[in-house]
Image (cartoon, rainbow, N blue to C red):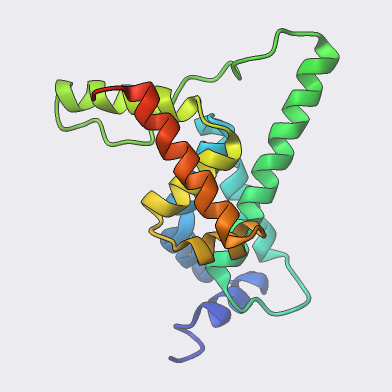
Length: 182
C-alpha cells in the first residue's frame, strides 16, 4: 500500500493541512463517527459539531504519527462527545434546570424511509436506544453498525473485552424487554 493510499499517509497529509486528505478522511469516516457521537449525545447538531471539530483538529495535529486513523478518530470523537455531555450536565445543574432531555429533537439512528411500518419500528427502536446508558449505546452502535469485534471495542473504549461484551448483552436484554414482542 503506498503512502498516498495508506491511512497513516492520509493522517500525515491531513495533519499537514492537505484539504484533499481532510476531505478523504471525512468521506471515509464521517458517517460512522457521526453515528457514535449521536449515540452518546442524542443530538444531531452536537454530533455534527463533534465530528467536524475532531476532523479539523486533525488538520493542526503535530507530534506522534497516527498508526490507526479510524481508531484515533473514533477515540477522539468519543472523548469529545463525552466531554460535551459532561459539560452540558454541569451547565444544567448550574442553571438548576430539571434533568432529562437535551432540548434537541430526536434523530433516528435507523433507516425509516422504507414505509410507515418500518418507520414506526425505527421510532420504537430509537426510543428504546434512548433508554440505554451511554456506555451501552456506544457498544451497540460499534458492534451493530460498525461491525467491530468485542476485542476491537474493548481496545477503543479502553475496557476489558468482557466488559464490552457484558455491556452489549445487557443492552440487548434491555432492548428486548423494552420492545416486548416487536
